[in-house]
Image (cartoon, rainbow, N blue to C red; front, side):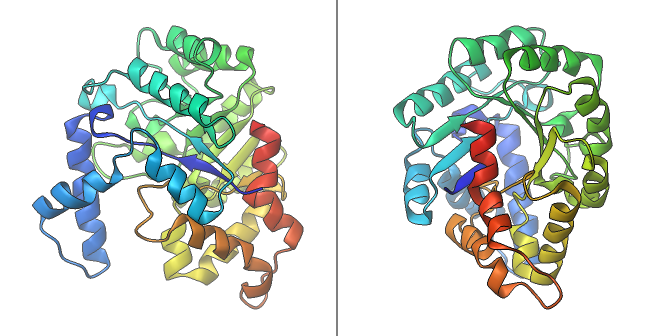
Length: 309
């Protein structure tokens, strides 16, 4: 089984205009680093709308093309940074739940909430109990710590409901996001204070991946995923293999999940190509770095199946 444990379904009306402007600037800077030039207006008018997929039609086509059996959808809440979008968060979560109902064998949809919302606990409880969402996604880089009291109120409810959490970690994006909130050290409190709560540290914490791997050590309710490492895999395959090998050595083969972070990084590497790259690690890893077929099978789907199915 092949499971993408980290995907963001997006639509124009779900995210505030300020966020789309930030994404446009990120794409512009990213293209410059790759030696490509494109006017800002062209990016905003042609590339950005290609991301919009409110009905999940492009997602299902991509899953079929890439041989993905199931995808975990992680909604985002940016209301403090940018204000409410045209479709409020409740409407977005209901849309995720509806997509999950229409594709029960393909889609696993999470809830999300910024814990600074006054009704954060109530909204999460409704999303999980009434609308059937399967977990909680947190994005601390918008300005909150995962181990602060407001977040703990939400985590207490999620722990009570018995569903998993994905927490974005690492240095994500530019302004107005704040890297300090993504430092995985803050998860040390969470995984110890909520021993029955399984938490996946999204993106292998990027710049703090070494810290995450040592932190996770004997904390068996802390996992991670390899989403958005496609740029490293493409530009420095040896480095990618080194980091992944270290993750497996520190966490064990059963706490690392495959994920893409698409549609945002699909232009760097398609879902299929990223999955194929991982599949071929036992045969194509650089000299001195080895992966077993069992490890690859665990990463690509077995681990996520145990967690989400």
